[in-house]
Amino acid sequence: MNLFGVLDQTAARHGDRGAVFVGTRQVHTWSELRDRALRLAASLRSDLPSGSRIAVASENRPEIVELMFAAWAAECVVVPINFKLHALEMAEILDDAGASIVFASPKIAASLAPATGVTVEAVDAAAYRGRLAVEPLAPPRHTDPAELAWLFYTSGTTGRSKGAMLSHRNLMAMTVSHLADFDDPDADCSLVHGAPMSHGSGLYIAPYVLRGARQVVPESAAFEADEFLDLCEQHPGCSSFLAPTMVARLVATGRSCPANLRTIVYGGGPMYVDGLKKAMAAFGQVFVQLYGQGEAPMTITGLRRADHLDADDAALGSVGYARSGVDVAVVDDDGSPTELGVIGEIVCRGDVVMSGYWNNPDATAATLRGGWLRTGDMGSFDEHGRLTLRDRSKDVVISGGSNIYPREVEEVLITHPDVAEACVVGAPDEEWGEVVVAFIVGDVEAADLDEHLLARIARFKRPKRYEFVDELPKNSYGKILKRALREQLAGR
Ligand code: AMP
Image 1 (cartoon, rainbow, N blue to C red):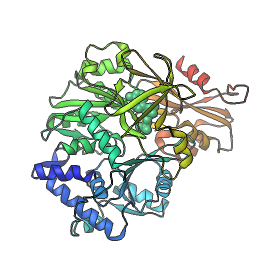
Image 2: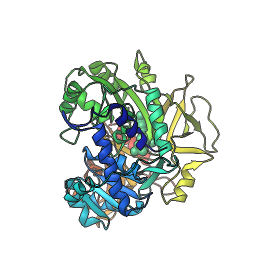
Image 3: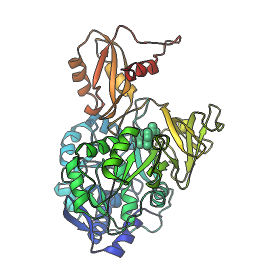
Image 4: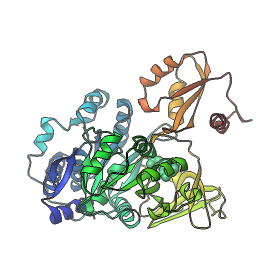
């Protein structure tokens, strides 16, 4: 089984219908998309073996769709790269993945080429057009479903990115579960790519292509609330995956629900109950919540559309019920299931769970134990089978849907000559969900720290605020008490 089969089937059924749109403009039919993917696949296989890692670093663009299917047709592995990363961070991922080539938007290609030894090919370049002129490859017929399809880099708490290895089977399990639990699109529907296609929105290409739903890429290549809502008026039966911050931006427009908006899947970070209620008041019953992570993409638990109807705060504040095909449990330090209502680490297993981290057996052994994925998230089940997240043991800050690992920022801050100590935590924020706040011990100006960070890591990871303090609270082992700092910020 190869995920290319998803496109193959839809091209056979709906060949002449519009498949990929930029704004309201149709760019390819399903037959054209299939043909382009197979030509790109042939060009890839002319000089690369199967299993090669094909990276894609781009703002949301239509080429991402054809490149995904091309890599799969060529029995190669897609390595999606967050376009907001610094060129040096992208280079690190390319190096770790052993990527053979990276396809990039023109803007990213220009900044990335000097930073990496990997071949960078801009998707508007003559070389790319040349690939589309070669004879198409025959579709793959015998791919082992356990073969890698998607190498998904999550920022590591240790500073180094880890590549979650996801197979054709993993992504098909995600696809089937999505169609079983959340949405039931057909060829008169659309997937509007509001969130980055290097993450959840790109993963959702599989279920929507399987049903022949249009792939709509906003003209702005980004998320603009008004443009997004306009697209949901102009295309039929629209669904989208959005980070909670994006949902808040839709609400802030003051507009009512577009006629053709069917489903908004929110998740990937906490959605506060108050924000969800406001969103439901503005747009009605279009919301579905997912809880997942790169290691079990988009699929651990969820709240269906109907679960939002007449729901109380406990239900709206939860992450819902185990998804179809996924076992979910909460365990204590020994790995034994906790009693109902008792907080422990959330673990899950099923066909959606990754096979491990790329070239990282230690991290794999720590994360996959006894057949279960240790999520690093803490939570508890109630008597209805509903899971509520309580804390994140991994300390990740999720700001506007992007994960920021404090350690990574701290490690850079600490390299500034005038910083004695640094500690980074998340603070609750109405607009962003959370923002990064850095506590600094040292004699230094915020502007100097900004400059220091901007030269080394992505802009979105930079603290929104600095707190200059004489000392950091520590326990008897000298470990900084992050919880105390978080509580201090939350108490304000
Ligand atoms: P990522 O691997 O980048 O998708 O990040 C996954 C992490 O985001 C999870 O381990 C959770 O900590 C958090 N997360 C995902 N979905 C939700 C949700 N619905 N509510 C709260 N946090 C979430």
